[in-house]
Image 1 (cartoon, helix red, strand yellow):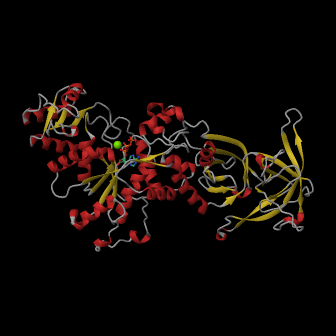
Image 2 (cartoon, rainbow, N blue to C red):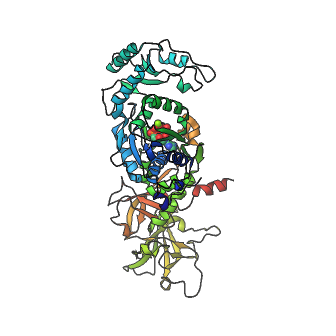
Length: 576
Ligand code: ATP
Ligand code: MG
């Protein structure tokens, strides 16, 4: 399904309920709620990441959905750190999340919240449940709890502690909080129904003892609320109207509703599930991404091959391209696998429009133009964008010694080869037609060191006067003007479409060619002083971005954002 946000739909007239946007099932639900005047017409969403890893492109889908809906309905979207499980959470992750959501272009104003700020309120909610006879302290061991829970086909059995008195429960729960008991010795459970067909409703655990310091609350707490208890109540405390989450929480919804109904007066948040993003050639599980980082398969969370927002930003993807992708994939109720070529196409389309063209040579071959005066330099006007004259022109120096790509010359050209070869001519982009004369080879290895050519002085901005046809056009840089640079050619991190289906073996399917580093490249001098993060199309080579981390003014480092075309499609074609 393709969803389109038009400028018009962003300026929605909320008094005209028949004009409400109806582009997917979530917006349909919101429309129904608005028509029924639920929540007094308010729309409040939240994006609730757990700060136990960096955000990835799947999270971007959720960010775009939640913030997008809020903007469309003139509502609000909160950013909430869902930090109720101390293991693995950290301030570094919080900071990265804040950075990434902001970079994507969304604004939570003053509504940055932490579920850990609600620990006291959540504790008081639990006390209320105990007082209402709806929760009890259970002292079965974790194994026993599992055993008593039953299976999909068998009902569970009541815990022997299920009928503890309210006083005893209050006393035990307080002492759990006070740190009197070992981890795992007691839990607080909701008293619901041990024979429910939904296993999650069989007296689910609400609190457990866990002596792990929390990155924000330190050692203040030794009991922590479970996700199912904390999440719905955090939503309620923030007066969220529509709590959008991924499909795996569908079975948790009855529990969400049970807790909210027991504890919240008035408007209640409503959970809506949608299909999470799965992307071919990509892993989107935080646990696995952590493994890639920790085992050094990538250079870090922001390695340009990572599907993280930080990685994509460093690679050179724009927020606009990512948002376009999220809009195009839409939201659905069924899990599916999105083809990564869709993301890559969004990136290319976006870059094609915005990137100035420049010339760079990444595998240089020296060319000496024998009949061009030794000390002459011509400043050639070159268009920055052939389809967009408003992007202007720049000066590119031309001189006697140039670099071209090694594969733009071939001593034994195959059929249809249109570039430089013995006896052949080629046009240098924006400049002259040159003709191959001779190659100089290394005596020992036989490797070509440089080639000598002659140029036709009449061909600048002109086809040859005698009407002979020049088929090939190649790019070049002037040796003495070019800026030496490093170029990192990035490709897909995995070489198979479904690494996510390979379980713990997934690292076996890493693409060994996902990074190639070229250290003797040259870019044209107009890039002198260009800011890190700047993006360009290197003519005929692809889209490149100045690395924001490793680049220096003395030695720029360029990341390949994308090739000009989908090279994987060609490989797949050939394989057929
Ligand atoms: P993981 O399963 O990899 O650990 P998570 O879902 O636990 O990730 P959270 O930090 O809890 O990560 O996610 C924050 C929000 O982003 C949640 O609302 C979650 O549903 C949503 N989200 C996570 N992964 C995806 C995805 N692949 N597609 C869409 N939304 C996602
Ligand atoms: Mg989660």
